[in-house]
Every structure is written in C-alpha cells, then in structure tokens.
Image (cartoon, rainbow, N blue to C red; front, side):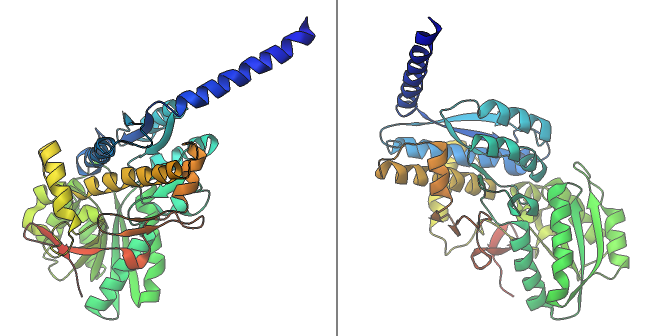
Length: 383
C-alpha cells in the first residue's frame, strides 16, 4: 500500500505545482509597494513614491498590461521603521504571484529585509541610498536614484569647482545607517578633492533645533556643509545657518534639501542650496516633466515631487522588464524578472539607468542631475 502511495502523491504534487504555475501566468501581476505612509518620511518620500508607482501601474494597465494580464498593487505602510518593514516583506513574499517589491523608505529597513529578498529571490527596487546596500550581496536589490557615494562624488566636485581649493567640509547626517554611511563616505573622499573634513554632526528623526550642531560647525571653520537632511530637518538646519550668520557657507546634499516639505517649511531660506536629484523639477529643457506633471496632478490633485518621479520610474522599470520577458515568451517569474532587471538599460524621467550584474547602484556619476533651488524653482545647477 505504501509502495503505491508515493508515486500517486508525487504525481498529485506535480499536477498541483503545474496548475499553480498556469494560474500564476494567467492571473494579475502583483507588485508590492512598501513605503512610509506614516512616520517621519511619509510626506517627503513615502507617500509621493507610492503615488508615483500607482500612477505608472494604472498607465500600464490602461495600455493593456503585459500579455493581457493586468497589474495589481499590494501596498503596505513601512511606517519609516524597521520592524513594520520586516513584517510587511515577510507577508508579501509568501504570495507566489507577487513578483517584485518597491520599497522600503530607509536604508536600515532595506538592510533588515536583505535576507528575506535573497532567500525568496524577489527583486526589490528602493529609494534607500545607504552605501552598504550595494556594497555586496545585492543580486536582488536595485537602487533607483543616486546613491550616497556617487551623489557625494558629484557634490564634492561641485564644491571644488565652485569654491576652489582648500575648502573645509562639515557633515550633518541622520544617526541611522544611511546617514552614518553617507557622512563617513564623504569624509573619506574629501582629501582627494583638495577638501579637509573638519566636523561631523548627527541628528535624530524629529529633531527641529540644530543650533548646537551648526554652532560647532561654525567654530570649526567649515566653508561647505554636506547636509543629509530632508523636510523638517532641512528646515531646522537652514534656520540655524541663517540665525548664526553663516551666509558664506556652501550647502550641498541629497534631494531632501529641496523636497516639497522642505520648500513648504523653509521657503526662500533654501535659495542657493546645491543638491543631486532624480530630476530638477523646473528644468525647462526636460520634456518629460510637463507630461508627468499633468498626469500626476490630474490623478492626485497635488504638485509633482521627486518622490513621485522615483516611484514612477521604479514601476516602469518593472513593466519594461516584464514586457521584454513576454516578448521572448518567457514565464513571468521572480527569477526571470530579476535577470531582465540586472541587464536593464532604462531612460527615466531625467536620467539613464544602466544596470549590470556588477552595478545596481542607481545612475552612474555622469548621469546624476545636479540642481539648485531659487525662489520656488528647482533648476539645473552650474558652477
């Protein structure tokens, strides 16, 4: 009896597996969206990124989806925190029909779910920009947007070109994995640009008073500040700079320096900051921006931001890769999708991405847009 049971059971399991595969290839294409809908990064990054991804998903469906299959978003709130992110990823990867995850919002959370994505061979596209994310073991991780290390190189070059030799650099960074890595990277690179690192300061989520940090930066004679801030932190930083009379300080940093929340809080105080971004939102030469702006504002009734662009490009990367698989009549699976992503060349809204097995680190240095803020406009920067 037992001898006859095993072949029947194996046949039954094989049939079930084949049926599941067929079902997966006929049902909706599920994509996870794990972004901060609450917490410190919700307004500045999480919500806009999720909305950009949803807009692209809706456009893909309006075009017929992939091979007649429509996309379905499975959204979770990472709450700008590690534990909710881990729980969300653990839940999402159990669904075999879910092919990729867009998120999370922070470097610490992205590092915490690395083992989950690797074990389940599921591609993850994220805005998290900590250096450790693509230093090793990044087979399933794709950074969409400049990384801190390539962004730092662009900004240090800007300081060197704009201010000349013998500059003194201070850093102000969030006391998390991404901020710490970014500040350390910039400090280590500074001497090769003829720049001396003189101070490294930190802050915590929710901090609004940066007087103590900027007082120390001023006393150390800094002529340039790498400010790894966004939103309320950018507002606190720039107000301390102005109150201390540090008018000659060149302020550079990532796109958070002039995101929508920073603009709303600090207004014209952030005039002149120099930052890398996914796009200079008011770049008159970029013909993609008005089209996306019109579509986004019609759908969500609020102004376009760079978080939107990032989420929009991430979902379109997934769509382009799946479309390539469908054209080759290959199954739409996690591993096949990952193979396409790891060899993807993609023109985003404002920059080109060229992924290879050795490079999942966002746009290359020469493709990073440098922008400045002037009276409500985010425009291309030139030395």
